[in-house]
Length: 506
Image 1 (cartoon, one colour):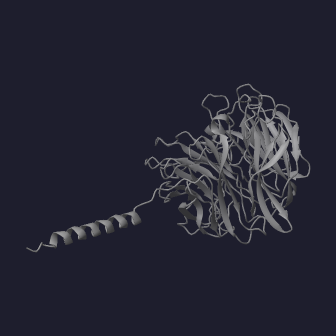
Image 2 (tube, rainbow, N blue to C red):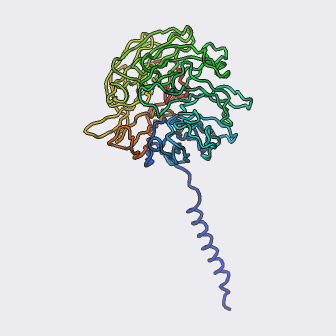
Image 3 (cartoon, rainbow, N blue to C red):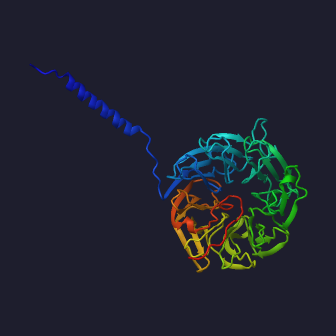
């Protein structure tokens, strides 16, 4: 009797179909993202004046990078704000804006999905809240519903914001931010609109308060907010003036701002013929438990002001320089008082072709280190104990202009051993204003470094054309457990306040 072949054929067909389905699934199923210890990615035809900050936006346990970007000034870009996967450098989402976004973000979950949302601003009255998970815009402060330009409506550049306690009873912290600057004004032209401080609802972008600068001047300063007397009464530190026009450093109460009035603000320090552009830092250098105020003025001067008495503690003047970057704070000398490292441009705006670096002893106000390296840049240095000897080191980005070729390099200054050395390789293009980020990106107990630069090798400022924005991630063999880090623009907590204590040497 002949056997029936049908069951055999059916079995063979079932095996083939199952194999096809299995192979197809292997081809189309989502592949897990592999963490890379080091990566670099280039976004073509973009540039940046923004500093990266990090938050986990895709819930993979690895921090992701958010920063402002854009094309040349006055040009719209579909990638003026970008979010990049911290695991591998791939783009997560991008957001369009009318002009360059130069601010740095703050993060707060206002959608209730467990993922941080993003607040960031820049030129042409751009200030947005963005869903951190999807990249969709939650709200935009300025809308062009009446066909007015931002400047015609009296709204100008937005700088980096700070959180303040909930003001509109929705259970969410709200925002204080400076808005100012007038790009149509010629240098030295005093006819400029006054800058403002604004209080905005984080949930809706609604303006809750607004007040003009106490001296009627322009403003370019990202504000710092603190409770100096630890009595729940918040104060705001901000500056006025600019590169060519005078201004001052002020302290105002949040309660007065909420009344739409800054007329009672305390003038802490005049800027004389120029203003205050870079945000100040707060650190206790009098060791009385009260934060003191340390700031750079544009005219090449660092000033320290007693937070308790509002009197000047010391001043440092560096003739024939101008200051546009803030300060790194760390224990660079051998006492328990925080010290300060910064970078000034040599010359007068816009002719600032060289730089000078200086470290100031916070206790005495004396320059403890000075050098002159590289071309102009205004990104803020960082501070960490790279060699784990109990003394903090400074890390900063340096531009070079040699034989008409622009390049940039990360350098570390070990003040204790009087040595300077590089981290990573030299890169083509310049980093003019992007402060690196230093922290534990992937929770492995070691410090990671994220730094950005433009890729144009022939134009320091890339004014006429943006060739590309490169974001680099490096793994450092430095344990986070043995470090206290000033690791981002306005510090690791993004608020300009230094809370570190000196750690004993190993």
